[in-house]
Image 1: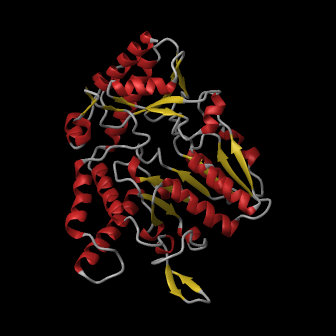
Image 2: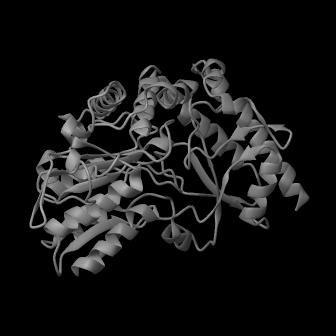
Image 3: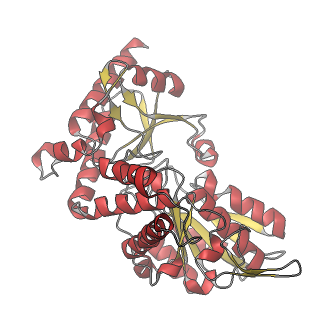
Length: 411
């Protein structure tokens, strides 16, 4: 099937919003296929961030002067933008962090301290990014708990039917990625949440790869925690969001100590601020939060359904093309995927392939993709990953296919 036969967004207009896409790399037009690592930013976000650096910058919540008031107002408006986008019940459930990694560490540390003890269990899946494995390992080691792993098959499908066998009366939390950063698999998180809640087990969703592709409704999902990063959402780096249900945020201790997260400090006792400020110690990345809200506004102005269909058809087009290349293996072909293709070509080292593609102006990711267990599952040291966004085109996919054919012939 060719996507040239279906209705598509005005990609040429969209691409004009992303100045970086118009440049050349190594003398060739840039083809940016590393969106699962970091997406590019529209000029609207860049201008908004620059505006604060040039005209308005002032530390939030700490002064009464003009700059402080304007920045505080913009920061809290950004929180409301994120609340609305996620359909959280209240802004107090939106915590700004440095990204998905910090968000998960926050929950692992604070929830672990409050609710996990010796002999308890936490369940993750075998397809998790390291950011949704290592914090739980550290917490289990600290608390004397056990980390259990839900496997996936060679097709990239999570074997969620085995979850009943893993859950016991000692299970305290399940942490699962919405979308695999390697396989592109869209996991059945709604079903997992329902099953977990039937046994009174909270669920954390790593939405780093899900939020860029789907409109998220945390109340409909009924997840207990949801984490994602701004830099994968067409926003700035160093900013992320942790959504948490109030019933948990009120009961868990803060992760960091410092300014703003306190109510009163003495040398004998400190009391903590209300949520979400209890979890936002020190000066936050307020410019990043404002930039992320601007990115969300940008996404809200797009036709979400049309964009989602277009991204899916880009994936189908690329998959069809790559399957025509002899010796190329795609890892993970679940029926429901986002625009991620991880692969290897027999006889070509992934780093060589990534380097040579860069010489042709094509940016992909090569390596272990921060998912060692996935590499081990397939018995490979590294993979090449191409990941697509709504500003990519069928012409770029065609150029990518032709570049791979050319490189294969070289080897």
